[in-house]
Image (cartoon, one colour):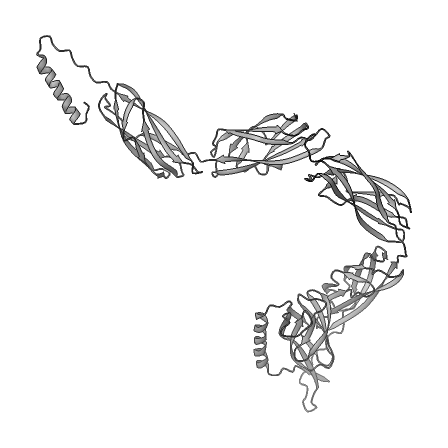
Length: 636
């Protein structure tokens, strides 16, 4: 009996060196990375296979045990490779190094390293003088056994030069579950397409898993039955690795000399001259100039930017076309919105096969005569628009009038105008009122115009600014071709200031000929700031003094005051016009006016002088009284 012991030399030094290596590796960007390895312990006497997980692996990637040698490496996929440790490798703890390019130099720049990742356990004879104190329990024998229970090939007979799909059903007939189960297709006779390795992780006893792989038959291969290599591998729960190479048979059909060859011999359109958006038919005449019958023939357009199918698919199937035979096929199409006039190239796709399994695909071109003139085509434009009221403010209902004109040379029929673009998804802060956002016009002749009216409302929470409103126009021409055009208009939304103009105290005792005060308040009763510049007072009934003053910005709830002086020439109700000048949200000068009224009393009538009174005495005191009032500013 032998006892397995782990040979670990200079553990402290190794751990220190491992730390330095990790620091060096992390400081240098690496094209590959290692996450972990399974198993991490092997017998140095027997060796084994390591499954290395990470990223950035390629078919050139190699693995190496640092201080020992480079290992035979098998690529499974970009996140998994397998490396074989040969029997008889020296025991010890090894750093695992992986190179994406297979070059283990410090200048390579594509090396990843996992310190102390693998331990090789050396087997030594047990000294005869040392008794065995205990006995380890003997593990239950067993292993996973993988086999291909069933498989299929689609198509059942692969064709030279073409791809096929193989599906295999993997079955674990063993007495242990398969850990890290891998199914790989290494190639050989057939060429794998895409990743060749499929990781199934755990496959339990008596369980199955299905794997699908796309392959290609190389050109030049003769007809016959060939073996396709399938490699199965798995570990058990103790880390033991097992491999089960399998083969499956694939029948191949070869291709002999000769092939069908299709050419477009002639092509024509109806109508002969096309306009953007026109529906038309394209007829192509095909001729088989090869030496085999063409089968599975498909004809279609391959230039979707030039023309698209009017209905159904863009391909039409034809019956087999024999050698030197001809056939015509008609495709219903719609010309795109091409800008270039003259001859426009349209690609036609030809896909066909032959009875020997050959497959062919070609692209040929035909010419279309295109005219972009408007002599017989309608063209609609939104030439003008207006809103009532103007400007707009948040919360305002308004009427939008669009002036729609047909500037083309043909009649537009079944015109549909949609506000907010297709589906009305871009209406922004504007909402239709009392109707939808779509308007219909039955016809609009060449050179004619029509006003389209739509009632809308501005969202009360809309921010001031310029809003772009898309207008989608869809209409038919006289040939029934549908045209779609998108245009845009801009609507300005300004925040309307809420200002209250009033006298901040009653105006009393206003008399003709005597000055009196006009105490005026301008209050911002809204919630947002109003950038007021000046407040001016004018009147056609009064003489105004000191009637203008700079106020400045008013926050919500704040007031600006002005005290002007007025003199009336006659008694009656006088009108006072208060003009508030401010800047709107677009920094444009705007005004708000409000009219206030003042009652002016006429002066009392003087009693008539008594007959015989001395005129000199009464006239003298009247003149003195007027003089004193004039000096005090109370009238002349």
